[in-house]
Amino acid sequence: MSFLSGKNILLGISGGIAAYKSAELLRLLVKQGANVRVCMTASAQEFITPLTMQALSGNPVHTTLLDPQAELGMGHIELARWAEVILIAPATANTLARLTWGMADDLLSTVCLASTARLIIAPAMNQQMWKNVATQHNVNTLKERGVTVLGPAEGVQACGDTGFGRMLEPADIVRELENGCTSSALLHGLKVLITAGPTREPIDPVRFLTNRSSGKMGYAVARAAAQMGAEVMLVSGHVALDCPVGVRRVITESAADMLYATCEHAKQADLFIATAAVADYTPVDVADRKIKKNAATLHLEMKRTTDILATIKQEYPHLFTVGFAAETHDLMTYARSKLERKNIDMIAANSVAGGKAFDQPTNALEVVWKNGHTSLPEMDKQQLAEALMQLVAAQYNQRKLAQHDND
Ligand code: CTP
Image 1 (tube, protein in one colour):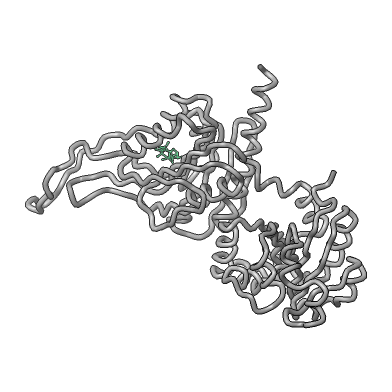
Image 2 (image 1 turned 45 degrees about the horizontal axis):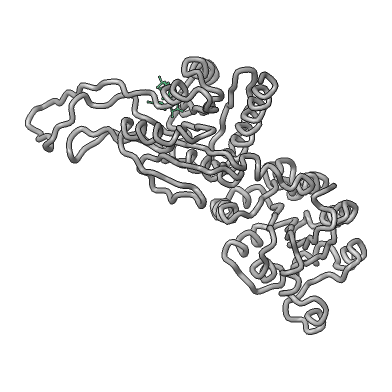
């Protein structure tokens, strides 16, 4: 039976050109057996009439917060209680901002605030508005709060631009809903261990060697894994980022500390994802007093650190392990050779030619595994992390199935 059958769905429509698709969306939801009520913002009514939505849903359309007549029927609190799912499609940039800030000055925002229903949004807007840091910040905040975001899709837009910002097609939204938005529960019950950020290799009590890793990608991966239902442990170097909601974190200093903490948590993990930029070398001796600038030159003797990823895979061969590779050239060749050399299950490689990707909001990845490869194009790091984690979950599940067949 469809996830939608008998479900009380409040379809919220905000004011964008994609509102014309909401009529088809409503028709498909009703066809799947859902009880649908519609709430339209004032600007949505500029694009499509409440009468159309009333005819398709078989219910009066809710448009205003302070209408005594409407409140006599199903008032806003009743509507908030009635809804099991609130689906906002299209969700404009303005709607995302209002949801993020918890505004309650129109019916749709008030109902969202007053409801405990699952909130699912299908954003639609100009591609530049979608890319804007303010919008991305709002989307990520909403995701952190457990809101499910479907799309947007890439393509030619009504305004003539091309890029991400098109609302998903109604049939695609309904398919996601029918599956119970299961991509958001793909890692349910699994323990995911992640390393992130840079390490600090001490030289003396006041100095250390480090690198340009901001930890953003690793934190985005941790957030994505938690949103997909995993229990996430993050072993992180020092970064200027808050711990994602629902993630446990331990902060480490050097490569040796990170190795120790990772080994401690690997015992319980099902998946290990190494995103950290671990120093490959560390000073042989650490001065116990501050080094004074007496000499004209200073020589530091360095020794190799232990490879955390390779060590963990060796110690815990059952762990599904994913590595990262930052390369300035020959991306695929190095990615494949690291996959083999470290004996890991997957590797996500990105280009850092000319300092690219460091501390940037966007990135692109080439994801490689034993018998396959896929390219994830340049996008916001959070979306990229989600796309990566979907691939990781798919490969992990395939391996589990194969093991099951062999047993
Ligand atoms: N890694 C690790 N411990 C190390 C070095 C690297 O766990 N001491 C992990 C990184 O987190 C990443 C992967 O190994 O997932 C690849 O790291 P990278 O430094 O790019 O590759 P190396 O194998 O060290 O090769 P090179 O530095 O020569 O490119």
